[in-house]
Length: 186
Image (spheres, rainbow, N blue to C red):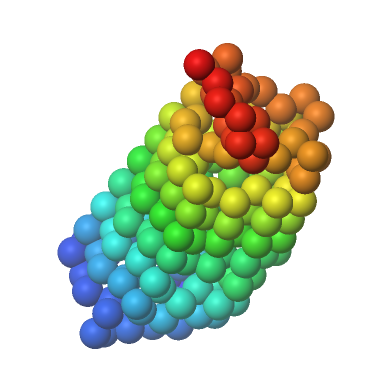
């Protein structure tokens, strides 16, 4: 087990992060692009200004993990260990990632780019998309009860294809609920 370690400006694309449990660790300015993190456990860790794009996270554990200012393109979170999954994304780019069938009720999205992200059949109950860009994100058979879209932009979702009781929207964003009807709003 690795505890309370700081990893700064390390390139894990060539030198693989050793398999194991990492608790209370901070990874700053590290490159994990296309790396293998499969089976590694991260507990109460922080990733700051890291590149995790296309990283293999099969059976990886993320419990109480914060991602700050990270590039995280094309990650398949549904392949990670979903037991105890608890993350916060702050000012990250998650374009083309997937949360298919995941329980995201405790997840925080703050100022995140979520373009083309797949939320199909995900449970987003009570999630707040705070200043997030959801351009072409997919919501299909998703649970969006009490989900807050008030400061989100560019979302398009079909109320008939999602559970949305108590979801919150701004007046400016209501057009994102009607876009599937191909009507014009002026």
